[in-house]
Image (cartoon, rainbow, N blue to C red):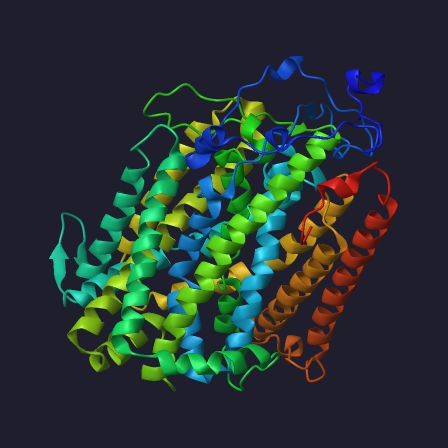
Length: 591
């Protein structure tokens, strides 16, 4: 072995000098791949491992003490053996944009808006896989990576995450659908301290059910993944059955024209609903960031060396979750393994998340376009009051069943992602140094979040139309996606070495994604400031030129941020070019 390798440095031999690497050293055997049916963890003697030196060969530690431990990247499993985090993300999406927001938008404005959904899904594909990148390369969560930039960012996203997901809108909507389906929405049930209409009680029972399922196994991620796969499968099959039963196939001929009508925003569009639709052309907002933690829990890449969160109630031995993650020497073997992992991550996310969304959501939009064109109702009312009366008994049953499973799936994913994200942030910012247990933080936050949702559903406030809660949550999710997309671009170009950082094509897609969400966020913020807050000068217009003085300032600030992010990413890509010998060995399509 090269002396620098023995001392923790990289293998500086050129690829021509290294022996050929057989496939069995790059890809896991069928038997080893089966370990990833659940989640996979490989314990290490962490304190005895070499620490990666400060070098262009390894991730930048951000000036912090400690350092990344050096280990070989695990062998990549076979795609055919994997059902991964994207199944949970698909479940998070089915009850949001795919059954409520986008069917409503298409029903209100026709297929001219379909371009935004189509490009929104593709944009989120690139964002989500970039969220996974840091964890694949280091085993650390994206929040730990953001903390390396500044402690402000994880705390900021925790706050926005609560604002966007802290209201049980999805549980309320699922309960409302169930109550309407059983013709029991207005029945009042008297309990010891409160009187509840039936749909509120249904919502409370759903929240309790979600909490209870976490106690079905010691590794909480495994429970969530298996339940979500069942719910997603049922919801998807019901959507296809509904589409066949009501006969909306002729509407699909409008899809190509909708894709090419890029930039069309019909007059009178509700920007909050539209931005919510963009955010929920996928899961959206705080939900997307959970991809990093699900990748770590699943054991993808270097995340396999990090521990999983065990249920503290069941009493399994905890597994270590190290503050400073891992990295690998850029040997030919490891570069080829990285290529295998990056290929797996992209294909698994594309085939599960992108294809699943495009199919299910487009079918639901076609039904809404045929039976509710011109409606001004919200999503739940549109399906229950406008479409159900037109489609007969079988169609009505399928609609209520599809909506219920889709909304329940999304509520489950929201509870999971909010609690997992927030527990990681609290642990890294304070809990680790205070000696707190991450599993215990997770369990406490899970319980508190469920109790909070129950309290909201129990309190007699005016939420008889839960869709209003969803609009607020969705719009805030869209606003959140602007800063974290920009941060991801800076993080993955400035902090990762050449062989694991994104290629130029992906850098440009993140320029687009940041500009995409930033533009609509500025539009919405300007509308809020000029409308709700009464600051008229901050009015913003879609064409920018008709904005007020304050609106110009908002757009100007947006332009400055975008130009700065572009400049940093270009500088870092150029600075790191040709710094790792043989880095091209790690490249796969859409690097």
